[in-house]
Image (cartoon, rainbow over all chains, first blue to last red; front, side):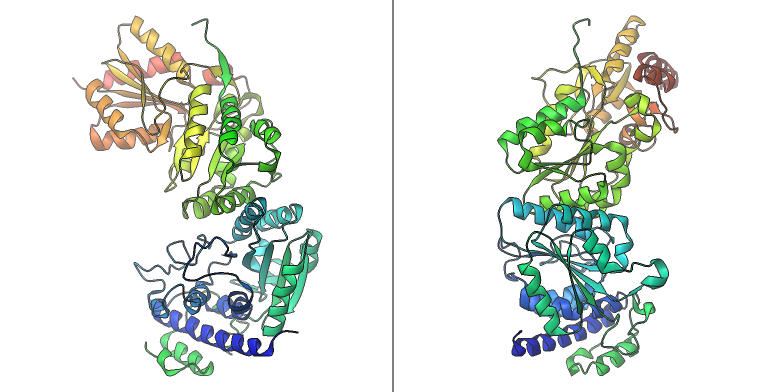
Length: 280
Length: 316
C-alpha cells in the first residue's frame, strides 16, 4: 500500500506543474500542451517519489538518469526541473525564447537535462547505452526513459526495445505515455500499434499497465519496476492527452499548438491556478 | 618501390583498438554483425566484456554508444561507412553531435575500392555527411600506420570523431615515426608549380603522379591531408599562394567531400584554379579495385592529366 499522505502531496505538485505548463506556454505562445498534460502525473511520481537525484548537483554520480525521448513535452520537463529546484520557476518565462536555456526541445544547456532529445525514436537507444554502461560498472543507478506511444511507430524504437530485452537491462524502466493520440489523429487510425503491451512482452520486457492519472498506481508501478530482475520494465500509462483542461482533452489539435493568451487564462481558471499565474 | 608493403587500413583500426583497449578500460566497442570485417573482432576476442554486438540495427547502436559515452565510456562504433554515415546520420547529428558526446565512429569499407560488393556497400558520401555536423572531427587516413595513429589520437580526444578506413590492402607509405597531428597536413613532396592534396589511401597514386610529373618537368607539391575537418587552412592557403594551382584527390564524391572542403578555404584565402579527382556524381559498381580506379578516374594517370589541365588555367 502506498502512503496516502504522499499521494496527496504528489497530487498537489501535479496541480502546480499543470499550472506551470500552461503558464510557460502562455509566455512562449508556442509549444506542446497535449502530451505535457497527459504525462504530468506519472512524471511527478517519478521526480518526486521514485527518482534518486540531487537538483543542487546535477552531475552527482549516484543519480538515476532520466531521458525524455518525447522531448517535445518540454513545458512539462522544464516545469518538473523548476519544481525540483534545478532552475528558477521564473525562468519558465523565457521558454522557447531567443537566448534561453529552455529550448523548444531540451538540450544540455539546461541543468537537469542529461542529453538533448526531440527527434522521436532516439531516446530509448540512448537509455540502453546508459543502462549498459552503468551495469558494466556495477552501479545501482536506475535509468528512466519517458516515451510517447506514437514513437512506437519508429523502427529504431523497436531496435532499442529488442536490444534492452536481449541485454536483460533490469536497471532500465520505460514510462510510456499512452495517450492514444498523435499529430495526425488517433494512433490506431494513423498507424495502429495494438496489441502494444503484447509487442513489448514479445521483446522480453516486463509490462505494467496502469491508469496514468491515478497517482497511487503510478507510485506502485515505479516501486514494482525496481523489483523486476532479469528484464527491463515498461510502464504503459493509459492517459488522456490534454488532461486537466476539458477542451484540450483527447484533441489531437492540442499536440503542438499553444493556447492563445485568452485560452491560457481560461485553462488556468479551469485548473484553479493561483493569481500569480495570470501575469501575461 | 618494390619494397613497399601492403596492408589494409582496417587492420590499423583493429590493431589500434586492441592496443588502446589495454591502456584504457573506458574503451568499449560496438558492432553490428560486421565484427570480423571491421576488425572489431580483434578487440572483441581480447576484451569480450567490453564488446557489444547490437545486431543489424545501426540506428540503435549509434545512440547506445551515445548513452555509453554519457556514463564515461569511450565507445567505438564499428560498421560500414554507408550504414553508419547514412542510415544512422540523424542519431549522430541529433544525439551525439548536438550534445557533443564522446562517441567514436569507425566507418569501414570507405570508397570504391570495396570492389566486388558494388554500389550498395561502397561509401562514397560519408565524408560529406559527417563533415557538415557541428562538433564532429573527420579523419581519412592514408595507410595502416596513419590509421593506427588516427584511432589512438581519437581515443584521447574528447568529442565525436569519424575515422574512415578501407577494406583492401594499400601500400604502406608512411612510417611509424612520422608525426600525426590532427588537423595538420603532412608534406610528402615539396614543389613549386602545383599542389596535389590527397585525402585517404589514394596517396600511393598521388606519389606515382608526382614522379611522372617530375619526369615531365613539373614540380608538384604533395600534401597528405588526413583530417578533413578541421581542415588545415594554413597549409591550403600557403599552397595556393606559393604554387598557384591545386588538384584534390579523394576516394569519395567530389561534391561535399574533401575537395569541397579545400575549395571552401581556397576561395576565401587565395583563389587559384582547382581540379577535383574523385567520384564524379555517380554510383559505384562491381569490379576489382584496379578496374574501378581506372573506370572512375582515380589513378596516377588521371591525376597527372588533372594537373596538366589545371596548369593551363593557372594565372601568369
